[in-house]
Length: 199
Image 1 (spheres, rainbow, N blue to C red):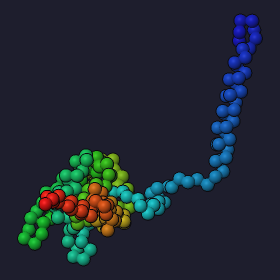
Image 2: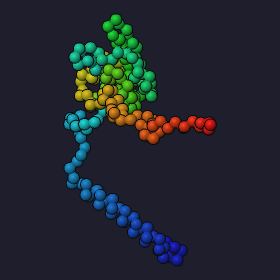
Image 3: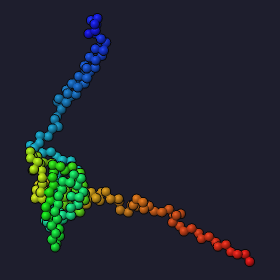
Image 4: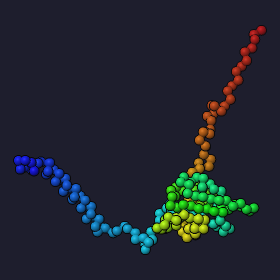
């Protein structure tokens, strides 16, 4: 109140604004009060993942031979931005294997670069994130645990070869910087007639 006992004009303006704001907020509350809830009660209710969802990383086996697909080339280790992958190669006369493969899932960015560079599609992403734990040490995955994840969950559609094919230019399209030269530039210039000496 002002000194003379009257209410300032700004008081009524602010009160009207406050009532309007509270009315709008309560209107939203009442509109949603009787709607069907959208919360998924995980883990009792399993959530359906979108078709292109990509979650946990895993190692897989060759479908035709049943051997480990990983050849220990270490491309995934070199390309990993946070450097959470460590691979040690084991060379044999037949082929190479990963002697050890560790992945620190607690520091992984899920950027999928390791999947994109894998020449044998050995490392893939799964349609699941279901790996809750209260201990960070459980998120340090070795080769056996990565293979177990690969067998337990459904794989995503994205493999290294498919992703690389999507990024490559279409076959038959001219490569940048190699466009066909114009016909005028390709045609040879006419030879100039030699100037003869008059007799």
